[in-house]
Length: 308
Image 1 (tube, rainbow, N blue to C red):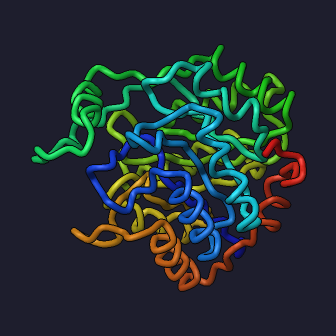
Image 2 (image 1 turned 90 degrees about the vertical axis):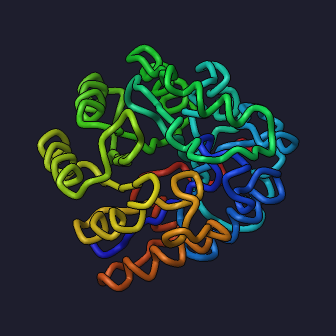
């Protein structure tokens, strides 16, 4: 298909403020960068919140409310709120904002997994905040918890009760089978939007042959009733996006997934990454989808039905 949906993940919960001065932390910066990414071509904005004082990932509804109305006023992109939050949050914490704010889309991690961030410590010794180094160092004992009971609860509470559609984040082949399980139970309906998440230590590596296997497995399990997108953490972000686009898939970029625009050069904004991936996919003959085209493709409820 020629239309391609670009998702931009604006800030996430993995990178810490010391890693890049361009990582948005305050509500003003998150809103500004989100609007800039939308203007550059992102149809979907994947959003986390941060404590503006410390830069820590936040589950606070008020922190979300500080930027969501600004984003809605500044662009028509689809707002996709995380239900993953941070691996150190409880499920109740992670769901607090999505349950109240009722976005068009939510992300949903399809399994419990190791989530190792400690390799990002590198040789850094200067930290802006006291929490950063222990957060990364202690991730060698960090498990992101999303059991089948947790997943069912999110599908019922966010999907059936609030009408959200999902970005199903699949970090490995097993997650595709879990997704099929819930589809068979009638908890996943309509066109399924799968995000292949590659390159996180604890999940599948960002290698072309792995993407081909993920795609073949999804074809077997879902036939033609799904769309897929690809994000690759770190330096494989753009090469894997190019491969995904060539395979007929969609793409996700953003400072949540990668802080750089080229080797050794920090991206100065999320929009810069969107502009780069847009040039890549248009060079392959793909046409970037507008937000309303993305809404139609994914069967979303529309911006008028959200709670912000």
